[in-house]
Length: 181
Ligand code: 2AM
Image (cartoon, rainbow, N blue to C red):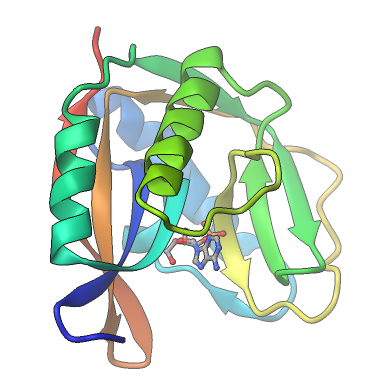
């Protein structure tokens, strides 16, 4: 990485108030730890819903992004997570939902566009909301018949720095914005 640059992404945290959010978060942590199969389990504190991945960006790019995001107005929303899936390509086991709420799709699209405007390379694939539960799974795991159903209510989103933390990574909040009630 260049000096003065950091690996960053936009995401929705799963652990913030209201307290009602703790129950689905705790359920998700339990589910994650009970899943069969190999790979590397994501630590509880790192669970999140990615909105847009930015990669390595400079402090100046961060300032410009923050200024642009300050202009957005996005409503708060809820989403049901009821699909456990495996992506062979990225070797991750993830939890998603069969319905992407309109404000979530719009927010991801707007952040993607802001990143493109800054000249950052963005994934051209359609946005698929997902919470990664396990990484580095070389084989498709046996997915339990009974699908989970967690309802998360989102009231804010953040810009995060991904930094090395021993053998793993830690996500540090750089900035956050409220979703409008
Ligand atoms: P994930 O949600 O599927 O685990 C920090 O690394 C976050 O950015 C993670 O949420 C990760 O995806 C996502 N991410 C990491 N590298 C990425 C890449 N090359 N393209 C898209 N997203 C990436």
